[in-house]
Length: 167
Image: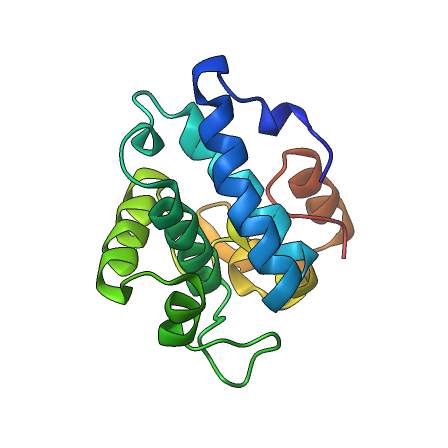
């Protein structure tokens, strides 16, 4: 992933960022895919920009594992019907970390970044079209699926950044 504005890292967090993404990139290359690697980089960058950054304390291996776990949880990595798929225990075992520690840190990440399951901001791009939360908008106080709205509403929702693309 190229360094974008969203990946701007405070100078004091640069080495931690590089350490964490070194682990997540390698893991994604070996066991997942580039989409997971990109989302892990994005999440690491977001956590590095938090004031104070939670990544400033603790082992980078635990944080990297927790970021992988959090991104995996949002995208149902632990569901055997999904591709790619890993069990939570398998992910932690491959990384050599405790599942309970990683799960607790992943919950902290969810809380810090206000993440929910199927969160469109943390959804794999290849799964975005099937993510119902990515398409829900409010029109005159009613929640609707933008994919079924008139074209002019879709265009306005896209212009405002409420939907990922024009269906």
